[in-house]
Structures are given as C-alpha cells and as structure tokens.
Image (tube, rainbow, N blue to C red):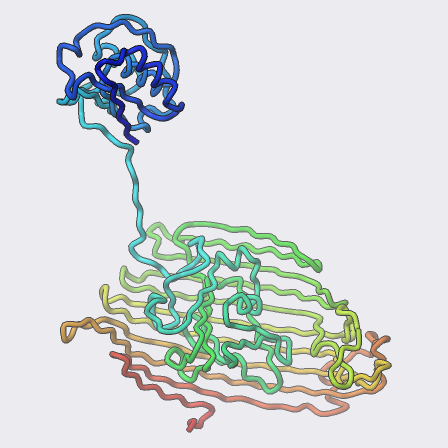
Amino acid sequence: MRQRFHRSPSTPSSLAAALLCCAVPAGLLLAAAPAAQAQQSSATAQTRQAYRLPAGSLDQTLNRFAAAAGIEWTANSALTAGKTSPGLNGSYTVAEGLAELLKGQGLDAVRNPNGSYALQLASGSGAATAQTLPSVTVTAQLEKSATTEGSISYTSSVVTMGRGEQAMKDIPQSVSVLTRQRMDDQGITDMRQATNSVTGVVGAQGVGPGLVIFSRGFQIDQWQYDGVPMPRNTYALGNWASEGMAFYDRMEVLRGASGLLQGTGSPGGAVNLVRKRGQAERAITLTAKAGSWDGFGAQVDAGGALNAEGTLRGRVLLDEDRSHSYIDSVWNRAHTQYAALDYDLSSATTIGLGVSHASNRSRPMLIGLPRSVGGADIGLPRSTYTGAWWNRSQNEQSNLFFDLEHRFNDRWTYKFAGIAMRERNSSVHQRIAGEADAAGKGVDYANFAVDFSSRKRGFDTYLRGQIDALSLQHELILGANYSQFNSDDAYTRTWEKGVDLWNIRHDRPWQDFNSIAAKDRARTSTYDTEQKGVLQHLAHEIFTRADRGGGRPP
C-alpha cells in the first residue's frame, strides 16, 4: 500500500503536522507531507531544523517527520509493520533526521531525482537500491493424479475407469468420485454407505444380507476392481455380495450406459473400486471410532519405502469393526486384512501386487417385519427381532491383485491388471413369512439355510497412446478383457406354522444346513459364466464381443 500527502507552501509545518496526526488513523501507513514545490531543492534538503517528535510506532513517527520537514514521502506499509521509534529531538537536516529515525530498523531512506523520498530494506553495503517488496510464492500442480488419499479433497478431476487416467471433463457422461477424505470424514465403512453417498445411486439390501446397486432404475451387476470388471450379483437365491471400504482409495461411479468400459455393462452405470497402493513416504495411521448401538472399531494403516532408493514400496492395513443394531439381538463383526507391494523395475515400468482377506460374521434378521393382509402396518416396534438365537451368517472373501504398467514415453502407455477372488457365503436363520391377521397370526416360521461359494477371475489390458494425423492429435486405445465366474450354490428350507407375532419364539431348537435339509432337501445350482472383450478405439470407432456361459447373446 502506497500513499502520498502534499501541503500548500503557505501552510505552516507545525499546523500540517497537527492536522495530519488527527486525520490519519493508527496503522495507516505512511503519511507523506506535501512538498513546497514539485521538486525540493538540494539547499532545502540541507537546511537544519529543530524537531520534537514523541515516541510511537515507526510509521506514525515518520509521518510526523515528513509533515514537519515538508517532504514528499512514499513507502510500503509492510516494511514498517510492528516497528516502533523512540522519537526525535534536536536539529537535523532531512537526511540526518531520517537516518536517526531508521537507525537499527534495517531500513534506508532514498532520495529520488524529483526530491521525494522512498523507504527500502537496507542493503548489506548500505548503498541505496530500488525499493524491495515482500516476496510472493506461487505454487501450482502441473500434473493431477487420480489418487485421492492425502488430497484433502471431496472430489477429483481425474478418473481411471476408462482405461487410464483421464479428465472428467473429457467423459461425456455423469461421473462422480467418492474420495478417501470424504470416506474418512463421514465414517463410510462399507459399500452400501458408499453408494448411498453418491448422487443418483442407491445401494439396497437384496433378498440376502448383501448389496444391490441401482442407478437410473437399472441394477449394476458388475463391479470393477482397479478397472477390471467382475460379476458380483449372480447368485442362485438372492444377493449376498458385500464389500468393505477400508483398503480402497476411492470409488468411481459412472451413471448411464457403461458397455464401453466393461463389455456387457448395465444401462444404469458402472462402479470402480480402486485400492490403496504402497506409499513413498513412511507413515502410520491409527484410527479408533465409536458410535450408536455399541458400534466401535479400530484400524492401523502403515506403509512406506522398503529400500533406500524408494523403488520398493509397501503397505499393511488391519481393520476391526463391531456393532449391534437398533433391532434386538442383531450384531455384526467384521475383520479386514490387506497388504500391498509396488516395485519400480525401472523408471518406466512398475508392477503392483496386493492381497486381501475380509471376514464378516453376524446374527442377522432377514426379510424384515411382516405386514397384515393388504400390506398395512400391524404396529410392531421397529426393534422387533423375528429370528432365533441361533441365527448366523458368515462371509469370507479373499482377493489377489496384480498389475503391470510400462510407460514407453509421455504419449504411450501399456497396462495389465488382473484379479482373482474367492468368496464363501453361508447362513442359517429363522425368518417369518406371510401376511398376518388382525391378531398377529396367520404367518409361518421358516428355517432357512444357504451355502454359496464362488470363484472369479478376470483381467483387463490395453495399449494407449496419441498419434498425429491430418493436422490433428488423436488418441488410440487397443485393449482386451476377460472374466470368468464359477459358483456352487445350495440352499434348503422348511416351514412351521403357529407364529404369534406378539410372542415370537426366539428359543426354537438349534438348526443347521443338514438338519433343515433332512426335513426337506438340498437344492443346488451352478453358474459358469465367461465374458471376453476386444476393444479398438480410434476417433470413436469401436468393436466389442461378449460370450457368457458358453453361449453368445443375440
């Protein structure tokens, strides 16, 4: 901030000083008394004058001196901020007075050719230099990474679900990113919470305790892991797919037709779960949480470079989560272990390996509260538990991740990503089914048991680069993907009448799969689904093919 003040030649110096001291607020820098002429003569500058200036802030004292000496004065307020002056008493020339006032302040006064004076930082030799302003540092991030961990952001401008990093603005569909920062801040621990936190997406419980994802009215049956599409909603009976979010960096969601991204996709969209990677800087994070319904958990996340060169990076994550529910007798225990290694074979080639295991045990209540004939509410409390004390459910999921990326130059990249998943879902539980009469009767107990196991394998590979032709720059993608899903599912059930909804029998005899099947039979089914895809993309030219279950769709 620079200021200039002038006085008329006929105005006495003492009166100008008094008026100036009253008119200028404290801290407003630096007043400059007007000159008698546009250019003060050298003789006037050498004239001695008596001064009696009281102690005060340096800017106020310099203002008073300028007014009394009749000089024009300019300065930057940052140079005198926070500085004080003992005042000035005695006869001095202008140069002597300024030198006395600035003694020990690290500042110099420089006389300009037009007779005015300017304030500057003192140089090492004491010679006058041009006025120096405070330094300003400007930083910019030239390259934006899709990784959200450590970004302190609730959004990202780059996604990876379209084979390689690309800006959201270049994707002609609605895309959202649920970042690691938002998941941590809002306590999002599972995929149901995650999907319900994204605009236009709904995550609902299916027939089983698993998750069904809907977007734009359509079900999303394939989920991507590091860009590799995997079938996750193909079961003989209901849906039991679930996913914790502990070791994922972000969840990318595309709304709208997704066949371009994952082969036979959903008209509703696609989701892509991207895992955390090995860290370059050593760090360890300990997290504890507590919430309603006896919910609590703890997590340790540690990683860093494993060699002096930083070419080998590792990470380990352990997560424990326990909770009860607003529904009586319902509880849940979840354990997650994850480890990752990333190694730079060279400055242009990186390989990544990850392994995870998630175990979930619970006492569930499935299906929900029964209704009366016609679907009306019969008035049961929301905490009503319809199961038995032996209700139990278990989910085990193990994943192996592998990827390789080679950067030929700044325009061409090759990547291969693969995943192998084994999953086991089992449950034995009591449920209540049917429509109740006004007395809360007419419904049945159902003893239900399921034993689902599945194996999934898949990979996605592509070559991506830029070429110049016809005075334009074009992007070329050549790629292929493959996924295979095999399942071995079995379920059994029996029915028993005599339910009184106002006196539910939670202590009915213990049941397991074999005891229920002995009264009925075990029903089995298998899936063998295979999908292959080839992608060639240049100026919107594309060819894809999909095979499923040994057959080819029309």
